[in-house]
Image 1 (cartoon, rainbow, N blue to C red):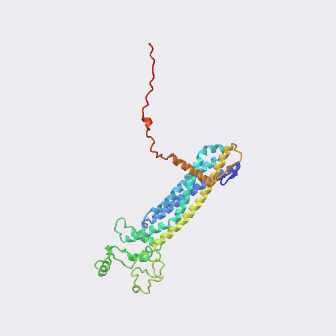
Image 2: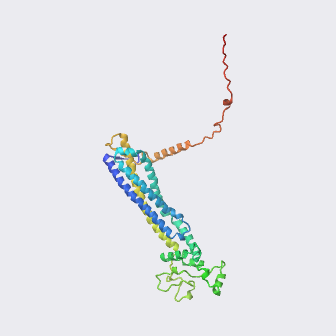
Image 3: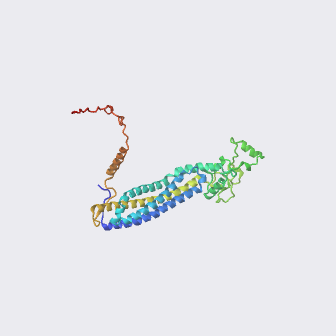
Length: 360
């Protein structure tokens, strides 16, 4: 029994072909939107790629870009096919192309769905990449005279100012690293020397943060040094909300930023997938309806169209049998007696002796 069987008149088939022609052109536009969203996401990720530990998350924008380009090409071809399918004679030119086209469109539609799901499933990977990347960037913050790292201080300062964040998880992360270059330390100062010697790794650690951690919303001048010493500043409480540093870590700030973008893009891609699924269903109905018209031999008659000619179970069994038969074609026979000559074949067969009567 066919799945989704519908009967079409000639007028309805022509109308269906015209609507699908229009929908395919709209799908070309949605393909361009997919391409644009992937390009936008790639640019946004590359803006702060220095503070990410890996570039593996770029597969999401690459997936969207590739799918968008494929959508433009597939739906452009689909608009040409649907326009010609309004005429029975023109449909004959595309009859052999229709089924491969529908199969390719089906896999393309599945790729659109995968792209939408990727936008929602990348958060954990992004969170880890940001944590490790920010940790390494903070370690290299002081290396302003080292080739390949000299730009990291500027990048991290801009990040903390733009996203109003401080440190990796919070401002205390700066207490665990030496973020001031040794060439700016006064090694003739006994206090500086004692602080360096007191650290096992020989690092100059302080309870202070860079200037970019200072909140512009605070009414008092920025307090960025001696943050753990309440007596070092008048009317200062480290645990108070009046602390004039950004409270949020940059990992969470960037994660919220990218999560918002991913969710918006994922919702858009999901809507595009539903639209492409609608177009694919319509093309399938048009294909089966036109093929049945050709079988009937009367272009003016009604014809039936369907999504699947048989039920889901029958279609699955049929396809499985095809795959199984293809597997048998490439199966190697393990019989050891193949190509081994038999004993009878090795025996020489004596030629028959023919007596010839000689007459004189």
